Length: 365
Image (cartoon, rainbow, N blue to C red; front, side, top):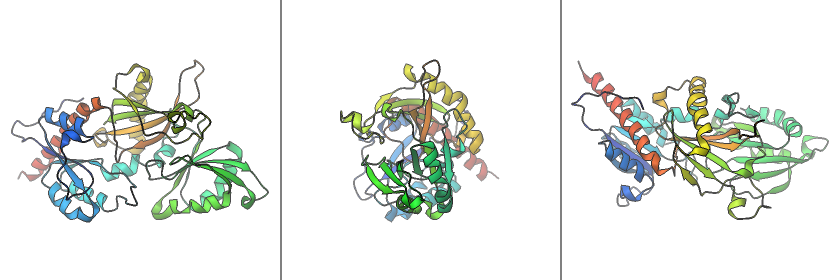
């Protein structure tokens, strides 16, 4: 990590770690939360860190409290129990404008924490056969022919989490017209097969994905999805850990079950785990720098904690694994390897101190 020199008279930063909950409940014990490794890492960095509970109904109260901090790290999903980030994100922008360091910043989320990033980075080594539909009309005009020509496709709404708005679509009967075509739909959220669905009906069901500037990303189905997923955790542009995640069918010991969505359980590994060093080198040396260039994101703007989820692509000629990017998670990355707590805390401490310096310089005559 780059060494930063800060003025000796710069006071110790205060950083809030924030997630949804009941703001009227007793404050949680940091050591008993999922963020315990980061709290511990921040303490080792000499940082005063506190949990802050967020609720849409108390946004003004939460904002007033956060203005007493120098930085805030946020864990809030894009979609959760019918709630979104429409009240949270404006608050975070206000805090950032006031000089607080915010991670992940809403603008960064809109650049890299959406499915459109799969299309924009499709030519990187992690890319696959990927298309973007920005309107219902483009979706209706282009998707049926692509489905018929290219085999099963995976559709992903631009913002979502936990498999929400992700479907594998397989053409089972072409028919003479669009209204005659029949598909099988497999949602990632629950792996419950929907057979005998008219393609035209399914496409109408997808139209809400285009509301408020939304869009759909269309990727080729990866044949090795049954081999599981590798999650690569990063702090800024540095890999800080990995996890392995198996499909639900494997976790239920039912190899005949439909396989698409992943189980919730993960096997965690630190950044030095030997099976993932090829992936680590690709991320740090090639793919993350290319991502930054494509999206025009500086290293300092990358989130303190984010992850990239990979499915296994086709084997190389030498028999090695290749990797296909499935999604990037920025809004709420948890759980994560406990060993990631220290590097994430170091990033947060450095970024917050830098924000404090800027604020101090701006106050000087």
